[in-house]
Amino acid sequence: MDYSSLKAAIIDYPDLKGEADVEANINLIVTLAEARIARIAHLAGSLKTQAVTAGQSSHQFPPRCVEVDRITVLDGRKFVFRPATEVVLAQNATAGCAKGCIWGIDGRTLVFSPDVGDFILHYYAREEQLSVTGTNWLIEEAPDLYLYAGLAEAARFSKEAEQEMGRYESAFGGIVTALKQQDAEAAVARSAPLRRK
Image (cartoon, rainbow, N blue to C red; front, side, top):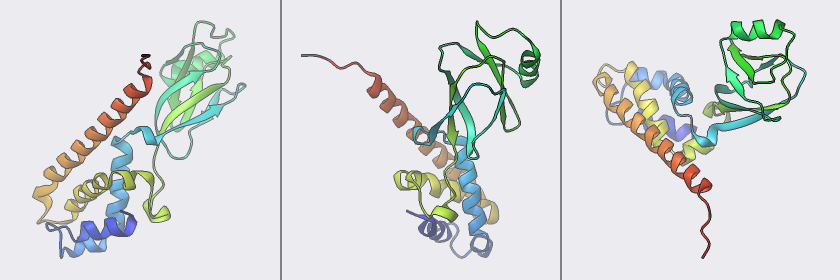
């Protein structure tokens, strides 16, 4: 499935077929579906990393970052999440963070305590918009994820299909759960020790 076939699948879906408002707003519907997926479906394939070098007290999130997964400090100290105001107070302190570093989020900026060495930011990234790329790994791997996210958004534009929104949202949630379960099973399989004969 790609951008064009997704739009056609939504427009031609039996509950929505012939709905002028759905056809007129199909580009917006796909954009809303992509936003829904980015907010909810934090999958292993969307997990990205970014190295951050020492000597900073803040760092802008990458443009497509939707949620921080974790931070790995390269010198082994623990990185603890705190409210951004507490981090600002720590930035003004003269003592380092030998027992652990603290970090917080201020808008789209990661702020952290003084004396932080290099670290790796692990974050979930929003996929490139289908209207730009035409396709991506996620729509190819899980086309129903996009279809049901799109149907849930399209139902808002249709009085006839509005009562079906719960069914579309439930199907979307089931697909997200199944994909996350696959990710968890794959992670366990990767971390399982090899058995010797």
